[in-house]
Length: 97
Image (tube, rainbow, N blue to C red; front, side, top):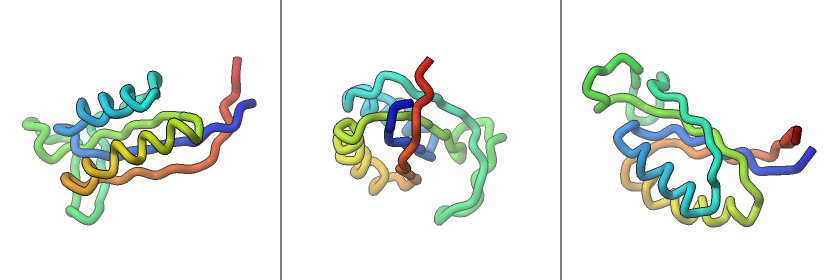
């Protein structure tokens, strides 16, 4: 197994393309996206059934090295500050196959 940093991002769906672009620019080429994430945060309840996508969130899961993490955090911070959202980082083990 390989030690990695697990990055979880919940972001407004309208900002998803920008977030994915920032991940790739930071060296992260693999990620998983779950659209229509529902929940409640500082901006109230977000339901995944909005037709216009204006009030929808997406969840992004990625794994990276510590060096890549620094680039990701630097790139994501301005977006999160501007539009809100959540970015959680934790230690994880990658089961290589």
